[in-house]
Length: 490
Image 1 (cartoon, one colour):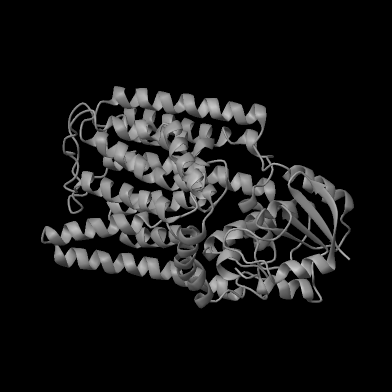
Image 2 (cartoon, helix red, strand yellow; image 1 turned 90 degrees about the vertical axis):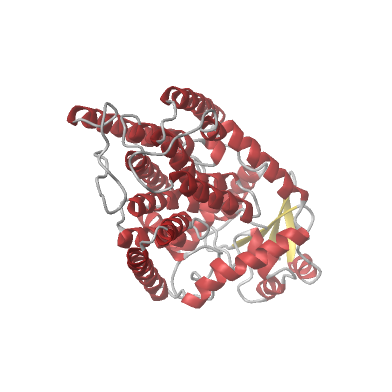
């Protein structure tokens, strides 16, 4: 954890009692290593938990990814290809357990990289350890959706590696990490934001030639990564135009649909998101920096306060632009929170105050993890019962469709879907009048089973007037489980 000593990058060798000596560096490494192991160990009790809707859908999609009728084989999703590739690795390795281990590895790598970032920004005794501890208590928190293996969690290691690379002026590596993060979760453009802020600062300070050179190297790394990932995706039948439509064009269309037709549940999730963020303790970590004026870091000429604000501001914007306000969106704010904490320590903020804030976060983490271990991971009402009923009655080769979303029902029972949409939002945006679903129900590959929540197909943003008569004519209701209705092909 030796601090950076690059004069051309603005870093200087720190002096005085806060500096690392050989013994202190070794002690910091041991503490960080312990935190990395703890971060992985805290996830072990949840290795066998049931798949969530997103996890199940991505695994279903990744298993069959190849040349097919849609963007990713026979299914479509508004996510970039590197995320699907990571899920494909987990699927080929066995599915559920490898996916959980992949998530644990991502968290452990993130904690280690947070320590590196802390050592760069605040090269004092507490910098790396405090940064690593902050990443641990936030990434493992069930309140922030950290137990869900989704794009945000898998992208965070690339984000932190990219932030470290920008500060260390390793621009080629920074560009690679920036693009890799965006190709896992398209909204996590943190490294691009930080790199742009640093390059603009260099231009303002008069280092134009250096800024232009660094920017070109950064762009080269990003474009090279993009080319490699798109080439792998193309080999699997996913075209660059299709990726653009899914990760860029679709998001704009989805925003319009949500703004126009969203149900009251969306605003309820937004309020819940704020409460979960408060309960995790993240605002306490950020609030400690406001208790006293933080001085300028003696270790770099970079405007760390401005950079931290730009980074956290982008992450907050990413949560808002997500539109649906799911808890796992908050995982994407962890790198910015760690950066703000490290910046405060670099400017002389009180370590004791941060230790107290971290203690509060640790209590929240322990309480929520204990609750989840004892009570189990909450699942949507009726879903386990529907899965059990289908598992007892479905036959080999059967297929199914769930209206709308809840791909975990199909995945856990082992049913494929002839309908390309496994998530509800793409249905509302791409097939709102259910014309495609109607063709599937009338076609030769119509599903054996059809599962709905409630009496019919109608929902917010969906016109079921065409598909509902076909469902009524060709399927018979065979079971009701709470609000769920199970139909079988006649």
